[in-house]
Image (cartoon, rainbow, N blue to C red; front, side):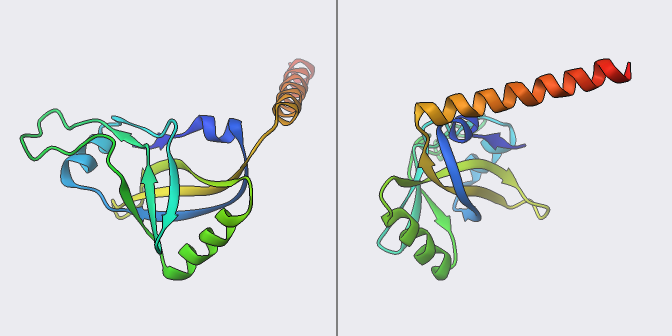
Length: 148
């Protein structure tokens, strides 16, 4: 199962991406496997040499008991020290932020987060992206009509 943050690609210009592990509790893993999570409005922050995922919502596991997790707790992201230093340098640049693009399970079944260093898009940039997408769609449709 893969949890996507589609709004991040719409609202931000992605400068660089990296993969990070995520420290989860047992019921969080089960809830993500069922697809009960949201990255809408989530972001990451570098704080005292550690990276934290803030604002991600992982629903409580339905069969969980009193040991169930808190849905919006801060979750630690697992990165090498050099990667953390590099992300921190990017975050010091004015207007840049860390946004999670997706949560997924790798081949070994370990939960990973794809982080992106982003810069906010202006309204003009968004309009330009929409025009470009529409033009590409029209070209594909014209090619289909021509073949058919």
